Length: 413
Image 1: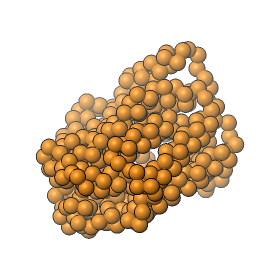
Image 2 (image 1 turned 90 degrees about the vertical axis):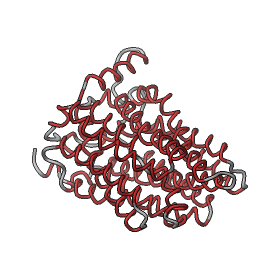
Image 3 (image 1 turned 30 degrees about the vertical axis):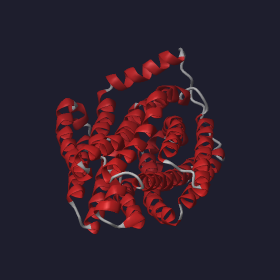
Image 4 (image 1 turned 180 degrees about the vertical axis):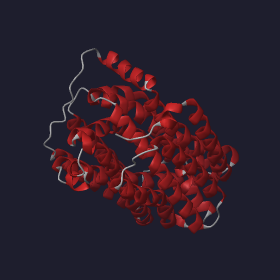
């Protein structure tokens, strides 16, 4: 394998991959602006009649209702990504997302938004994302030569993380002006992502494997369970973020603990992506060569420690710095996990494996938001974040003992 075949310039010459990358960037930024807007709006509406603890629980409910569709639809979604044209699946999902955010925009304009209605909209959006994630993950490797896959995965993460810098910060500014404006910008970004996907020419129809739909879903589950590197990597992400995820509590910290308002909330929300983008830029230029497993575990440990520091901080700029460190550490573990999983998974099974991974990630993120909201209701938001970070550190040590093959994983090739 020559340097020319695996260089960044070679990747940039892959037309369809760059369209795919642009769709990830615009779609990801639209999703984050929507997430910031609906989170702030739910908390603001809830605080009219509820205490801080009660309104924190409503933020957790946003995560729960977003995750439940993923829980129910993940396996059928993965099977669909391995049976149908993945580009067409993405276009259908983006259409559904545009419809949902247009409805949210209309509710914001008319003043008809209530907490129950916003939760219903979050659930509908979760249905679309359940099908979007497996198809999106499985389609990327079809658009580049195999030798470019590790670099492409770093660039995929760069697309997401760079949009995650702009998206939350911009979302904070937009929601301070009007929630309707935030939803309108998200709608335009979804439309741009759909155009990019529609322009892809490469065939994205997977090689359909024989067997019934249920048999194919079972095969995907068996593969993940029996491949201990794959199972260990995605379950570590599930456990750590489920316990230590603090994103859902950021509106609480911005409004009632750090007192920095919606603009400060946007900066807090963007800080993890700033750190993650810095690491993603380094990895895009210099992919990890060795000690991949140990690097991943180190990233999770630093993620947990930074979460503890954030929970204890009362200084805004210190909190921003700790969130940036948290994002940088998380990027290391995400990069290793995604590269390991996609390299060892055969293409006809990528959709189903991606669906299981999406289920785990959805559980860690959205269900983690519910866990954080429920814990905040019981013990307060600060203690909820601190305890979560401590438990995530304990999980890191436990997974090293439970998955020694993952700890020993060396080269990403």
